[in-house]
Image (tube, helix red, strand yellow):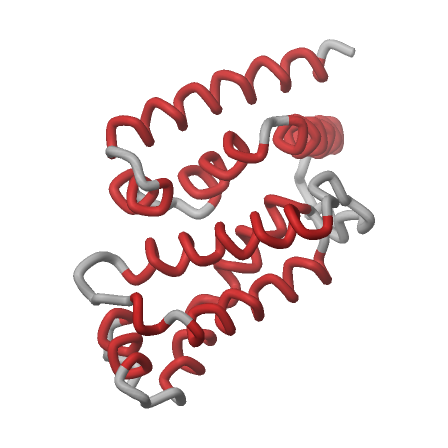
Length: 184
């Protein structure tokens, strides 16, 4: 059963085999959670939004044609869920939870380098949150989620070249904000 492609599974969901949505959920819940968490920084909200994506996929299963990438269709749905949530609740800058990442030192690591890396990561996270949501979104999709620009173009409903230009500009803006924060 796990050898079926995402497109094939979603087409089965579309034809009424709703149990296949569970397989898709298991395959993609971590990716979607990472996308939402990188966009809003809130663990609980990100978990809720992942659930909302699958509810919406079930509701709009009839719109899936199977022609394009399932991942692009799923992330387009995720993007719409995110926009709808923040439009409705007007909490786009809500960062109520602190990151729970643990930094462990292993024998032989240079403590100064570890501290510097941690500080730079914190500054990078702050810089990413300071970007406009559409710039943060394209960086999360391209750099953190490793999506191809063809898929990103489908999600954003633009050409692949336009997606590349947007990512380049967003990266340039991120670099400027990072350098500004790093100099403080």
